[in-house]
Image (cartoon, rainbow, N blue to C red; front, side, top):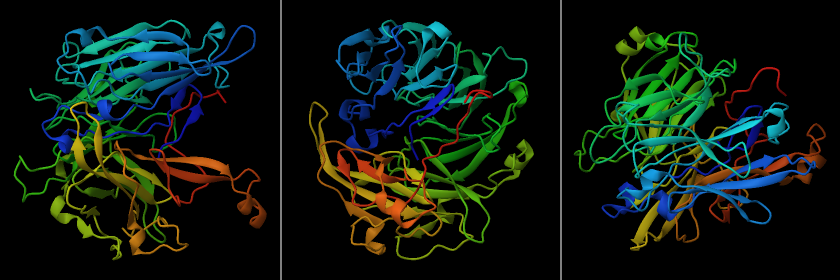
Length: 486
């Protein structure tokens, strides 16, 4: 699930992750960037007079990145990648933004006078095989921290994969003092390439580690810290064809032995031809599931033409390369076809949920309290200016049983009809966002053990607020924090 939190030097952004719509809009060159605005980033800067200034930073439809004052909307700076001048694409430019904050006292305010810094990262997607890091520590000025492309990262294709920020120690490598890294897939374009997962230094862009996959990886890579030692030790990546990779990171090892890994699942339907097979552009959603009386597992959820959930039964054990090489991947034919009305056997390797005719999973899933939520979009028209119309459905499914998990219709009970609900007609696809809303006074009054400021979760899809949301008291993601910083 997504949440906005301050984690010392690293901030995880509350952004709505958007899917690739190339599979939905067919041959027309319309992409998420041209149809749905990326969520902005907000950075709060200190002022010598003691007044803080909030700045909103967001990619524009023309591929530039712009910063404006959050109150006055006055422009502060604009950065336009020079590659756009010769790019053949006019839409589908830039990944979502990622921000790394060096906030010395952890107060959420960037004070350059005390050495605080802010770095911004993104890829150029259809505009080229390029990733940028910008230093935006100065509120009114921006400069390039580093730039990498296919000449420095062999195998990099059009930079579709939104980078993930993490911390990894690589023996013998030149790294920044905090060991911050960026991890992303190799991308995808019609010319081929992109069959890579890369790890680069967050301060310099220097390549620290890479691995070749079988097919391109245009989606973001899910990165976890499974043992809470502040360093990443697990990655999950999905190829465009549907093969799911797991990697274990061995912190403190050199690049050659930094990670072990292999394919743990193959979601390709053997009955489909290559031309008819779905393409996977969504970042996998990974959640730890602890069944009552059962053994914990990691659920890896991802959607395309249907929704898939597979179970990693070795959630905490780092595996040797020999273990991966000898392992047998979960196959599409192993998954249990579910509809939301029948319980799932506890030992099932995973499940798949068929969608209605014309439906496509619209974005990366989001999981909270054992319930996975995702949206689908059924396109009815795409204009020449990439304005999309169609219908949206919201799904909420218990991961462990594959049954309805939220009272979506708001009738006070959860039944099989709550597996999915149609939403008002939208002019653009959207994803589920979960945030803690207003204080739930009823909780505070009926449960004396509950904190007086208990917050009610609120689920939204675009501008639509759902009738009900998953029950949870906190929004938690795996994160990294510098020791000694509160």
